[in-house]
Image 1 (cartoon, rainbow, N blue to C red):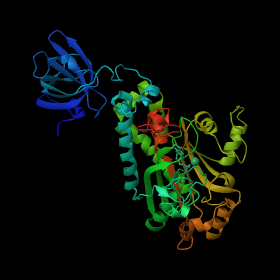
Image 2: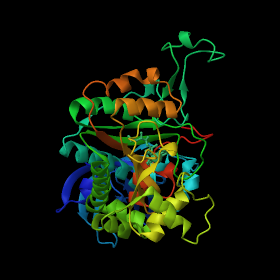
Image 3: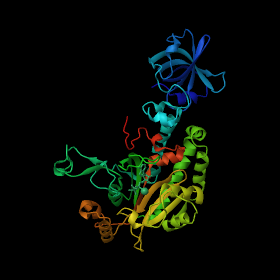
Image 4: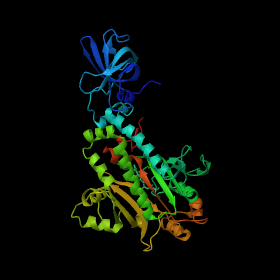
Length: 453
Ligand code: 4AD
Ligand code: MG
């Protein structure tokens, strides 16, 4: 394989006879030679190529337009110019694929909104190259975090018959034509099936066998919320631990967020510097803050009290029994506590059936981790492990226990206290990069009315 530009640029000595391959970012012609900035996506920086007139393959050099692809052979020498340590003096150049003047990434400084309309080309821009390199590294860091702690990676199904969150926000999966509710028995699976909203229920079965497990995969929500933080298809990381209570769950959630922030600071320096320069000046400071400071923990009732007494007028009402909206979450973390906040013990009415009921019979052992700039990044809970209470909870939420018979079985056979949570991978990336829109941290965003590419 040929050398990637990131390795060429980190050379410590000149190199003779090198081949690089990539896409032309810009070309400047001078008398007798041209400069080509070549990028192959392996790093933010381009490699400067010096092409002297008469170099085999160069004539006419005007074919090497922005967006075209090229293979260059040459010698790596110290660059006399400013701005780069090395340049490649071409001995041979080959145009692989031309790009005409309609190539849409001609100029610098396109808006993210415009780049979304050319999602097939935007990884070739500086910003999106950085975003998707970061996404890849962080996915690796997620696995490393859980693997180091002896969590077993479980691939939970994407097609499922159960609505984990009970919110009815599921995409139906069917091969039926016509009225899809008429002949449910004749459908592919012989029952109603959906794209999963969460792998939690299946992860719980594995936790109740293998102690510590996690899932990391795509999840789907047919919620019609066109916000900067909601996508219809997103990736979720869901650890689940047997013999664990709510306190242990919060410990792991906070440790995870802190660890990802530290990883970002230590391993993504070049791309992070780009985010700090062009996307969010505060991002590095915020990450350092999260690494250094303990998270604030408060009960839901205290959160409601703080918000009620804040003197703020919020768009959505605040009162006991209502969900916290993102404006409330952001007030708590950004303005009131000025640090990440974990809110726990929510009213049972606003949380799903599987959460463990507290002794007050009013609240459940739920927890949400809120971070500055985003609000909720983690949602989790201790699970109800008592058979009778779970069945009662299901009736309370108008669910039929027989539809969840295998889940209920876990409470019949060797039931144990257990807990877990879900992290939206894109929300985590928004927090770590400062990129303000979820559409810009996922390669091809699916949102209401949009499934292009
Ligand atoms: O709070 P949620 O709905 O929790 C669950 O699904 C649990 N079953 C997880 C568990 O305990 N194993 O979702 C978890 C996280 C949220 O905190 C948020 O970060 C992210 O998933 N999320 C979304 N991210 C992007 N777009 C959406 N539409 C999202 N909905 C939830
Ligand atoms: Mg939630």
